[in-house]
Length: 224
Image (cartoon, rainbow, N blue to C red; front, side):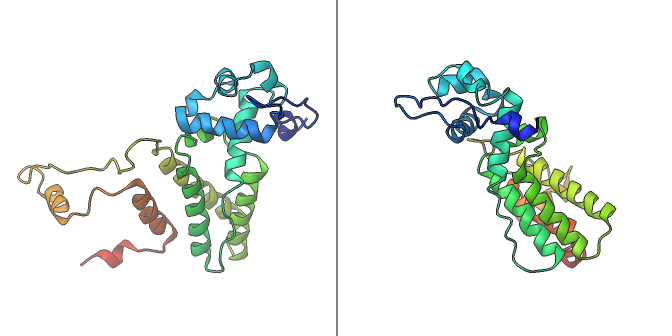
């Protein structure tokens, strides 16, 4: 049995939606599961918590999802399937930046979701489609399969590393806050503080670093 077929059973009996006679179909359950994640965090998504949220029982959930892992796989793939991969024409750097930025923005809309991607790396069709386009762009521009795969992996981990720092109802300011530095003891730090360059948001830091990784922006251009 494939991972997809084990995650959601097409022949599972219908369940009623809370307070109605409509069945709790898989899409409705996934919407509720994402709501639990957005509200209570990744650790808050348990079969029991979801059943309570749906005013249902865990037995009914298991008719559609084999276990929590299958539920997580379905939720994450549903979100990743919404990533905009319609990149405009451009250089490989521009296309890769677009795809990486779209993935980050999608995860930023659900800041509690990223830890689940670490707990269980996504392998569903939503994620595979984005990976395929990314790799196709690199191969088209002459990268060897080995380098294309490594570059994809590096950028994927870069996106996830920043996304996991985002949390619902939390400040999205970079942790690199160097305000209040003693100008005598830390003159270089104080000079940066005086420039007003920091702190910046996680999103701004992400985009800046992405440009550096892809060679779109060169640090040498910022030197005096």
